Amino acid sequence: MHSAYIIDTTYFLPEILIDNERINAEHPEWSVDKISAKTGIEKRYYAKEDQTSGDLAYIAAEQFFEKGIIEKSKVDFLILCTQSPDYFLPTTACILQDRLGLSKGIGAFDFNLGCSGFVYGLGIAKGLVSSGQAKNVLLITAETYSRFINPNDKKNKTIFGDAATATLISSEPVLGKPVGKILHFSYGTDGSGAKHLIVKNGALRNMQKGNAADVYVADEFYSNDDYLFMDGKQIFDFTVFNVPGLVNNCLQKNEVTLEDIDLYIFHQANEFMLDRVRRMCKIPAEKFYIFIKDTGNTVSSTIPIALNHALENNVISKGNKVLLCGFGVGLSMGATLLEY
Image (cartoon, rainbow, N blue to C red; front, side, top):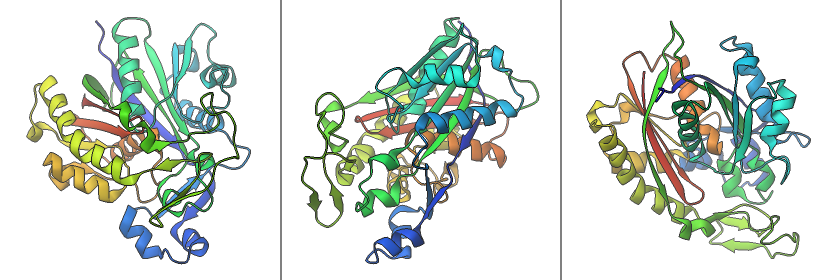
């Protein structure tokens, strides 16, 4: 069995800035201060009309290769986490293999997960590396959730942004820089809550679009079946009542205690939810990393973006233990421990 390490990560935010002032101009009843207080988010970014998740993924990957950490020829597996692929088929990862100029001798596939996707992707990558199927796995997360948001849906508009990240998982650490050894995982799934965060129309269950009535609930939701629907209360309840048990299970699997962890990086859903789940988990505020104000909720990209930011700002150093936890659409959750 080979060990697997996170070598480095990078991220890309598209060009269209959606700040709170813009949302306030479109929805005057929501002040700038109200948006910030409810979400902890001040700005988020949208892809241009002609940009797909595959385009964002390509840019993030190219930026990663520009760091010079690895040659493209050394990558032997490509994994893309996205819920907004370029096509139903073929898999966007295969298109990226060609666009990036990677070897034709690699494996490549997409997998469909949201806010827990990065942790699941690390689990897949570790499995490939540990079993000897790959030495260097490029894990990409990319979403254009902006395509799913009704223009009049002021609630989801304040939360979600588009982004892509690229992370290298390898069997060999890089000398001279902190790398994260990937340890044990814990997972959880409750598909009975799938309806609470969903885009109903467009795929094979409901292919027809444009025939759904608008839905209003307590002036908070504006959506229809063609767009993203999120029942915030149900997602909140799932998170605060299930994540603490998941975290404890992950700690037990890795034979560490809550106090042994130097930093916790959770999916950056919104600041209110993060504060509540932190307190439910009994994690000290100084060990709980939040980086959402300038990016918004970028779904599967929030954890690698926050991880990148923590590393770039020397918040993580050699010898640190970092616990990652993702949760959301599915309903799905996952956690793992990194040892630097």
